[in-house]
Image (cartoon, rainbow, N blue to C red; front, side):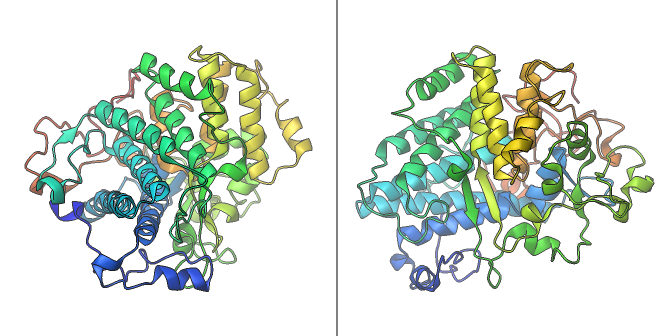
Length: 491
């Protein structure tokens, strides 16, 4: 890891680092002196980090193959395993730490130039990325991870996931307090909100809600404190309300700078890639008569919606054949100028609904639940009339069917997280909703749930002298559950 913590900018000529001109003028501004490290502006470094995170979390491997499959939403046709590859695993870890190093450097440069807004946004992005990383791997280097320059730390110690969560929450609150709509501009590197400081404040508080809810079963008092502080003071701590608030990075769609799924999957007029939809998602959407189904997926050769079904014998199941499995829908996988979804407003409403339903905060859980559904369906182009009808469907309507209202909240949250694969995977590990008991063929004999965690990278194990000696990895992706994963009877 030591070779990845200290960011150097002599290599900023890579496309992944110099992405995202909103126009030719922005492209020229982003392209200033890429080979002179001392002259790289803080905003450019911020943008570099954003594109690295977007390409890694919402790219092919994590976004579709690994977390996409483990979330029960996506799948790879013909694969009977989860294809662990040392080089890919090293690269995922390295890239995400490289992005966090960019955010640390952007914050430092911004601080030196007196740009408090840019420093705050850099801190928000660092905390956001750390949350995703710890939810994939568990305990990670964080407190000491970026101190090579200041303290010459080559082998940072690993923090427990609880400590990482505490630091993330503190960083997000600090960053939110630093933001000033009348302060200095963020510059050309803000590819998410394009300089809108009020939206960054909402994003910071919304991430805090997400983090608090994730830990609410293992640390309920600490979680409730955060939830009450934010939801009880909306003027001081604004959060996402509707889908225009979404923290989405929209790709320019030119040259190599097209949306990562589209770059892998090909053109919408010639769909033949192995990456498809998962049976667990498609079957639930069909059962609920969900109007998002034709947006999330395409019909197969028989004009039916069908997802790839995991389990023993999956590679010989005729319904898993190429022509029988639904492709990913155009909005999510086949749009040059598509989006990488860091977080959406629908999830905030479902977090509210769960907090209210569980008594962590006072409020109307049904109203929040129905608002979350409305926001998600509206974002996906569903008409108000169809939304009203959907809210009356058995299994969707409040207090209807055989599922509890809490299960309904959690299921709708999971559905609305389509394409946020790490987040959807984290939620099914936290809640077991929906129940994903179909495991890929090569693991199905020994396990009754998808993987619990990512395997630690070989480079980190080999080079970090403080790599913990008590790590217990079973069958690569299993072993000890994460700190907040309180499920029982899972293996």
